[in-house]
Amino acid sequence: MLFGGMMRALIQKSRGEFANINFFSAYIGFVEKGYDIEFFEPEEIESKPLELGCVVVGGIPIVVRALEKLGVSPPGLVSIPPSISPYARREIWVGCIGDVRRVVDEGGTVFVKPLPQDRKLFGGKRISSYRDLAITASLPADYSVMLSQPVNMLSEYRAFVVRGAVVGCRHYKGDFRLFPDFKVVESAIRDFKEAPSGYAIDFAVLESGETVLVEVNEGFSLGCYGLLPVAYASLLEARWADFKLSV
Image (cartoon, rainbow, N blue to C red; front, side, top):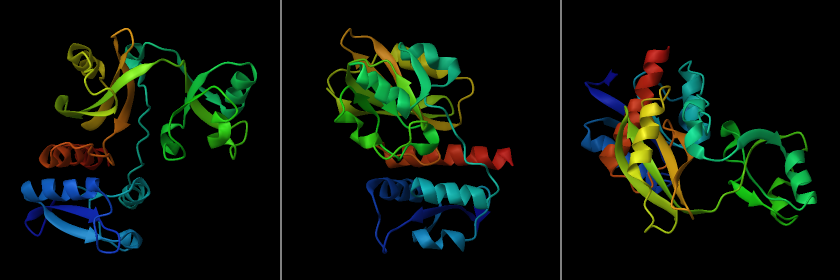
């Protein structure tokens, strides 16, 4: 949406400074794209005037609050969308913390991570001992989590997608020399029919050399992982444009 003759981006700061590289990268990208930039502190989100068509860059709680103010239900993109679940090459299901504790009691191993709406609760972790369970100690047995068959991922990369096209790919874990098979990456993106206009999709290389889907990540509030600023801003812009169409 035009604001003062220009597109508008609101970017979070913390005590007058960029809180992290993501916000700074978005700032550079939106400046290069000709946006009108406004900065705000976290506590100012309640009073900040918003309109559909602007882009809000900030931490997930801040962005969720901005969407709520705009009358948009915060999206809950599942980590492994059904249309591309075969690319995961492993069993994935929703269970509970009690299930994880039983696996450990029985001497087994399972990979656990929070559901998408709780993704900041703790990082995904391979659980095989009572020491590993420490991250779940405060959670009740019936607390729902994502569980999966553990596999040995040697390298992990994130592809950034804008309207079905990959605009960048960045290594984030493991051996950077092991690059995923991009035929698999592009095939999964084509098959992801319900995809938003901007998102990230992660792939891993296994010991066998096979490329497998790790997870999909929402684009409304997403780390840049070193993606070029204009490409990063374009991804955020595309995802926020979806919200304008949804209301």
